[in-house]
Amino acid sequence: MNPLGYQQITSLSSSTALTVPSDPEKQPAEKAIISPESQSVRWRDDGTAPTTTVGYLLTAGSELEYDGDLSKLRFIETAASAKLNICYYG
Image 1 (tube, rainbow, N blue to C red):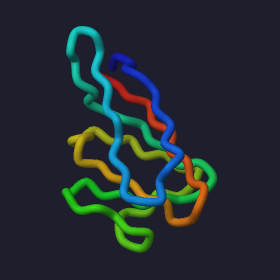
Image 2: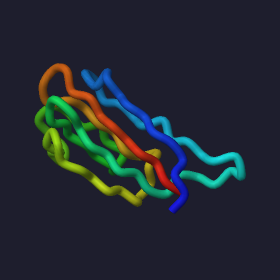
Image 3: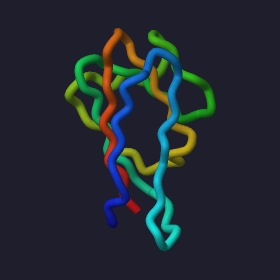
Image 4: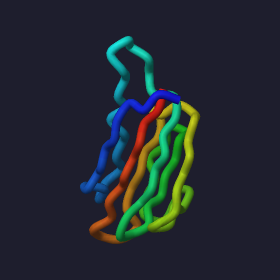
């Protein structure tokens, strides 16, 4: 896998999508490693926005290795001040 970049999202009070990069040769990101910091988040990848109580729970300090359609992923914090750290790979 080719590393394509890093992103940190600090505003997760509403449903938030990723900003998926691609490399200079136009290789799209195919995989992401995602880890919430400070607070847990919920996520969905089925086209529906998660809420603070509905969606798959990803606890602070855990890691999600995702290789589906990155453009469909959406996240929301379960409590104020969550941060999301994402590494992208192609």
